[in-house]
Image (cartoon, rainbow, N blue to C red; front, side, top):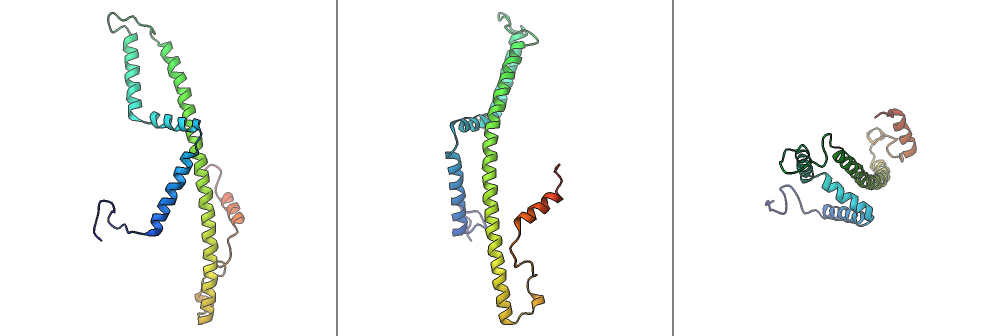
Amino acid sequence: MKKTPDRPEGDRNDPTMERNVRLVAELEEKALAGRTAGEKIGDAASRLIGSMPFVLGHFVWFAAWIVLNLGAIRGIKPFDEFPFGLLTLVVSLEAIFLSLFLLISQNRMTRQADKRAHLDLQINLLAEAETTKNLRLLEQIADKVGVPREEQPGPDLDQPTDIVRLATRVEKRIPESS
């Protein structure tokens, strides 16, 4: 297959893959469009807070504040002398609000991750049911063509998985601290 800028080597024009990519993109767009105004502000603040320009801007701001208030520049009277009480107040208030913006964004992302996990569980349950049906059909075909039972899939694989029992067993095996 010839390598093109739009298609990396090994990538094939798979309609199922294209459909899946389109569906995932639509789900993401729908989730982003459904955000509240507060969530949009929280997400924008999170993007800004997590950027290098934000860090550099704060470095410059703190350095300028300290230099100005140490009296290092003649003709400029310090307005917040050491130990910089006003700077401490401003930075503390900023930290509170930045934390709140981050929590808003994180809560939205957690809700979205929970929705994805529920969708993933539903898809897995459907796939398990389909696999169970396929194994039953395969056993019936094997019986018809005379394949001995010992060469067929195990007896428990053609039965539906008891999800509640399985979840309970997993919870008992995994300690709370993990």
